[in-house]
Image 1 (tube, helix red, strand yellow):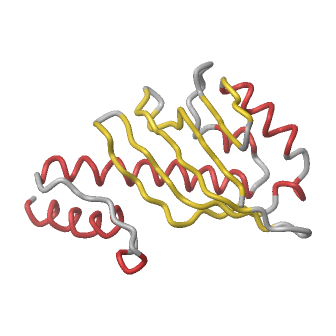
Image 2: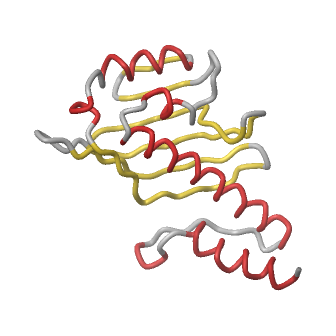
Length: 161
């Protein structure tokens, strides 16, 4: 059992802290139980983000939106626009990306996941769309909350470069 926890800690530490060579770091609590919780949280959140990427790249906006909490309090901010409510965010995405060509291929990079508590985390990173005519990209900050449905985005602030 100790070996499994140590192995999880070592692999999780490199997973959570990101690429130290590029200056990305997220401190891990030295308490083994808390470190395990932080690592488990990071893996679960990364799985949500990867599922969103995969759904987007299949042209599945509803699947992409599964990563957000289905709540009227879900917030999406982009530029000078603030959108409230899961359904409103979904409608915004469907209007802005009404074809596969507009959706392009989505990638995320430079993910940093920081546990705020046992039920909340903040994630920052970069997004990039590869499309035939352009390559929009930018940064994002997400607040995740552990819900009955699992880890979900409750607040998304995305910017374009």
